[in-house]
Image 1 (spheres, helix red, strand yellow):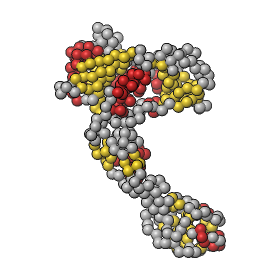
Image 2: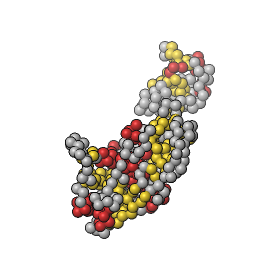
Image 3: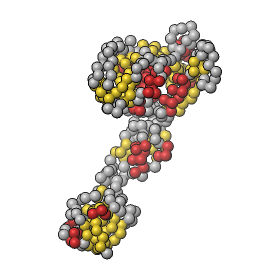
Image 4: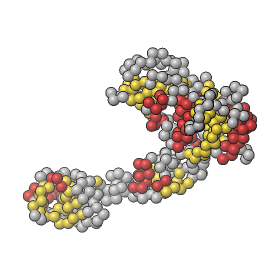
Length: 403
C-alpha cells in the first residue's frame, strides 16, 4: 500500500497549473478566486496622518496651556482639508479626519472639558498619541497580495483599500461528476428493496461548491460498460477533471475501471489510510489528443469525504494555481482513549469541547456519515499509534480541510 504522502506527491506531480490564461474580474466577484499576479499598492494607506479618535488635535508644545484651556480654531470632519493649527489653539477633530499641520497628538473627547469657546484637558498628551501616521498600514510600492493565493473577503477588501478595481485571476477549473450503480436512488423517491439513497452526489456537490471550480453534475449512469464509457467521453470533452465514487474494483458490475482503461489510462492505488483505502487516478482521452484527469473515490461516504479532502482538494487547488495546499494541523489535547492503533494512518472524527480538548465520536466506521455531522474535524493519527487520555494529537478542522 502507498502511504498518503507518497500518493499525494505522485498526484501533485501531475498537477501542472495552466500558464498564461488569466481573467480580469471585478472586485465584487473576486472572493474565492485564485490570484494570478502580485498586487502592489500605488498609494500609502492612510494617505495622510489622521485621527483614530473623536477628540481634539493639539500641539504638545503648548504644554501647560492645554490644562488651562485653549480656544477651538477649527472643526475637522472626515473628508475635509484642514488649515495648519495655530499655536495656542486646538482643533475639534473626528475619527478618520486629517490631522492639521502643526498638530502632533490627539486628545480623546472624554478627556476634554468644554468651557464656552475654550477647551481644557485632564491629561498631558504624548507626541503621536492617537495619530495614525501616513503609510502606517500600507506603504506605496509594497506588495499587498501574492499570486497563487485564494482570495478571501479580507484580501479583496485590502485590494479595494488601495483603489484596485479589478484583479487578474486564474480561470475556474471545470469538474464533472457522475455516479454508477443501479442500487442508487434519489431522495424523494420511494426506497425500493436493495436500493440506497445517493448521499455522495450531494456530498461532492457541496464540497466542490466550496472550491474555485465550475461543476457539472452528470447524474446517475446506468450500470453498463457502454453507458459508463459514453459518459466518460462526454465528461472529458468539456472538463479538466472527472470524479466518480465507487465502481472501480474488479467485480462484474464495476464498470468504471474497464471504462477508464478503454478511454484512457488508470492507476489503482491502495492507500495506507483509514478510512479511504481505495483510490483511482488516471486520465481520459479527448478528441484532440489531450486528456482530462480522472479520480475515482471510494463509495463509502466518509471515505469519499476523507479522500476528497486530502487528495482531490489539493489537486484542484494546485491545478488552479494555488501554491500552498496543505491543511493546517493544530496540536490539541485528546480527552479520550484510543487503545489500539491501526497499521494504516487514521483520520478519527472528533469534536472540540468547552474544556479545550477533543472528544471522539464512538463509531469510526467509514459508512457512518453522522460522525462528520457531529464532529468539527479529524485527528491525523500515525500508523500504529495509540492515544491515552491527555495526549497531544494533531487536529485538522473541517473548516480548514473542506474550504
